[in-house]
Image (cartoon, rainbow, N blue to C red; front, side, top):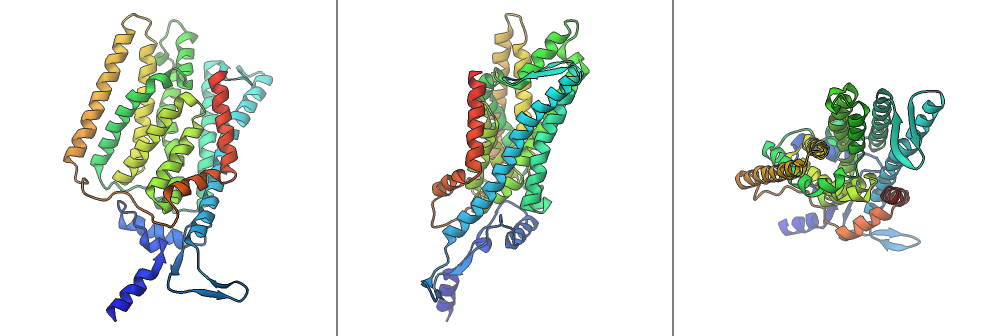
Length: 387
């Protein structure tokens, strides 16, 4: 009798109950499962008994297909992700540029060109425009994702710290990654353009003595880092991890890379996204991902400022800075991993299916309209590279 009961249990497939987001709190797990049981098109739910068959008068015996169900849900999620990316691109490149042209036309001291991402004019006008455009570019997709995914906030944004040591480990790894990727990034970033603008706008003042530059710097480091991670590691990551954390890592990283809009910034976007995702999962809080993004922004600013030094000692100072941060990052991450308590503990949620992980990723990338938006982002990156 017991053997029959066990066989019956083994034959039942329930993707919600079988999935264990191991590093999260009990409250998070229950809310996540409750969301997945809802009639949301982005919620993956599938239950069947492999020993049972359904008879259809016209088609005979049928089996429920887990693969077909997961494809349908992945398609629904990627549709929303694609639209959110489209909103990001349109707001940033089209509506933002159009707003600047209108302001220029009515006499405001701010100017731009169709063939350049640079903005010219008065410092107050430039910073105000960039703050408004950047805020809308990130906030509108964030609100859209929240409204479409309909996740409880405590599921959408992981908020409970399960292992504070992992936050330090992620920060250390971010320092290491920054050293590897930031040098080429610094020469292609819009942040460098802003610093150079404020360095030249008033020869009697340093950039840091100009209020507008300080406002922009804090906004870019704190607000942009926070909003970016809420978009990438919020509802998008939560919906994707229904198919395993590695799947969520892969797709969210590809999205981050495409939105970088510059081939030279792709390595940084990829590695920072991976460190942020892994750090969030291992620590249990999205704050880890935000800290990783802030470290990247701080490192980039420091590197740009060092490279703005016209003295012959600039290269030596920059190299000492990079080596010092690299070694500090290795030390922090190494100590945490050696002394950490999670060495033998499973930290990634695994999803098992008849389809392979690579086939799911490939299918996701081919979904419409995501594939079209990805193509637009690649074209933009190519234009930035050559023009």
